[in-house]
Length: 319
Image 1 (tube, rainbow, N blue to C red):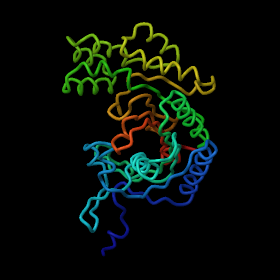
Image 2 (image 1 turned 180 degrees about the horizontal axis):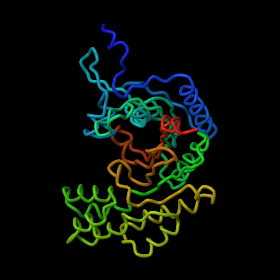
Image 3 (image 1 turned 180 degrees about the vertical axis):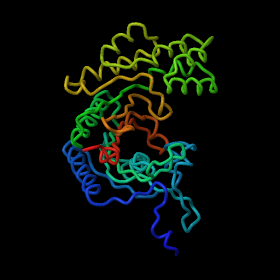
Image 4 (image 1 turned 90 degrees about the vertical axis):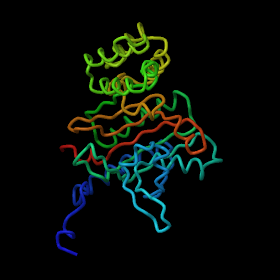
């Protein structure tokens, strides 16, 4: 073996030492203590699964992001892409007959390669929680509150949660053919109103509503304003966001921003969805939402909502 092959690390791999290690361990201790106190049970799924577990949860397009290898029996394995897929498998097997709801948490590394995001680490330390079998608004509120508590336990003070709902844009997007829908989602994601208006020219009224809904971002007053003119198809989702807001305390609302134009993850989330942003970080430090259709892919249909935090992103924040 040459010296260069010994001393070099693969792309996306990091050597962590000293303060970097201590900082991550402190974050794990602080956040998992919050989860334990909230009554969540820790699960520790395997570091690798059959590739099908992750593809079943995330779709065929996930394949290029998996770090895969072949077992001695010829079957393809993959390092843990996320915890939610493994927890869904365990809920459908190990906990198939357990009383609902199920309340689980996890902490550990996930492994993914993202060709469109050069330079990103391929191993990321996460902590997160899932509530399975609880369809009500109360579970959504609990997950949002838990996200705020986890951020505070991690020592973050300057942060906000950008919160939306998959149902706000669902009718408008469904009114478009598949090819146009992809273009429209791209313009919404880029916040390009001009290109969006041109793409929607001549489209049905439900789709035209995307021109207004997609650019709504703000506090509770933004929800109240859009509710006055929102199409019928978007109203149930908007009312659910308003109900969630009403359930929060004023100090909790101070960290919440409603962003109705977030389209990433709409193929996965079925209700609320959100991202956690912290001052000084160049990317989201957490994400979550409701994904009621996921468990059915593992043979045990049940509602589900959860959150995960990227502890590496938080650990690298300037002191």
